[in-house]
Length: 101
Image (tube, helix red, strand yellow):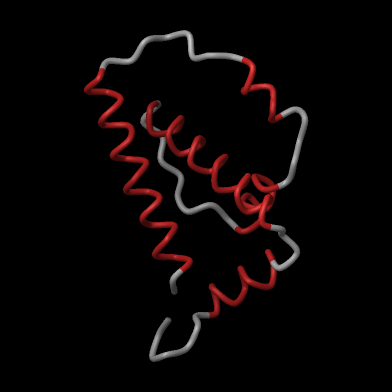
């Protein structure tokens, strides 16, 4: 919010995502978080997603569900896990701040 008014970016996102149901939002945020964690582990940063990327993350897809059947094969050190989780928390804070605008 700026001066008690919603920003144009916030209103645009509201219009573009108005058809999403609760489960869509949940699926989208879960996928977004996993995507950010995976990218961070590779040293890749791409933030924030466009509204279209977010809607794509929200939509149910059988192809995207395949990852649920496989465990990560490479072990991670505890330090690396802590670093990755902290980076993901920081990025999720950015999402929350964008949505609170």
